[in-house]
Length: 115
Length: 115
Image 1 (cartoon, helix red, strand yellow):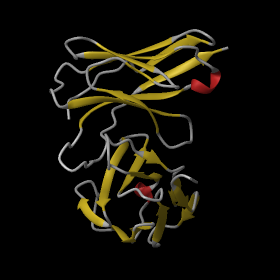
Image 2 (cartoon, each protein chain N blue to C red; image 1 turned 90 degrees about the horizontal axis):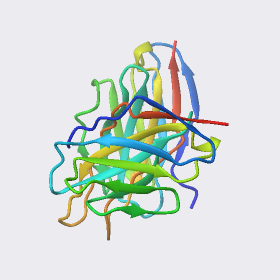
Image 3 (cartoon, rainbow over the protein chains, first blue to last red; image 1 turned 30 degrees about the horizontal axis):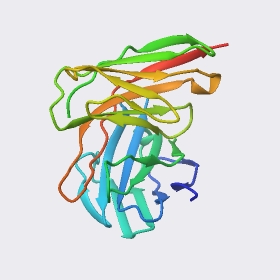
Image 4 (cartoon, rainbow over the protein chains, first blue to last red; image 1 turned 90 degrees about the vertical axis):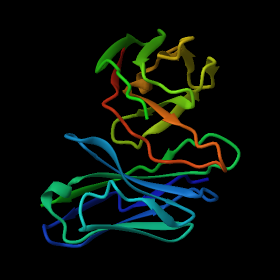
């Protein structure tokens, strides 16, 4: 398996622009998570899905952030409009829980820079 | 999830065993101890988890005290590639029908393997 795939790996944009981050989870996994990592706040959970349905979005910082999972193999995290404080590394992770305790598999991350 | 306390940094000589401590004095009976690590510029990586018995896999060993209030992750023969931030996370496993929720990361221990 290729593992969790994220794109783009790096994104540089200007304040006010829309940004879309993409994630392909490991095939067969039924949970998908979005995390954000900054120097100030560390790694924090933004939102997670189970069977394509959002379960907990309490970590989404503002209405400018939205996430979707239209099918089991694809999810997007959108920021509109973007702001410099959104600069961070965004990680996607997935896990399959059938049969045992969950362990999450993380993608390589998308490094977002908002100028 | 119970709170964990880890030293901010540790050094270890290459080839020696690295012992990373974690305190989790408020752990509940249904909470597991998980360890993840994050190598620079990569996504976090699952290492090992345990409930109350000591555990070993190809990456590491996990020693949990009898009262479960602390644990130690052991990397038996540390290499330079083991330099990373190591996170100790205490969380429940949702037993009914499987299940998962997000990980809560602390600041972790920055382990530096010295040549």
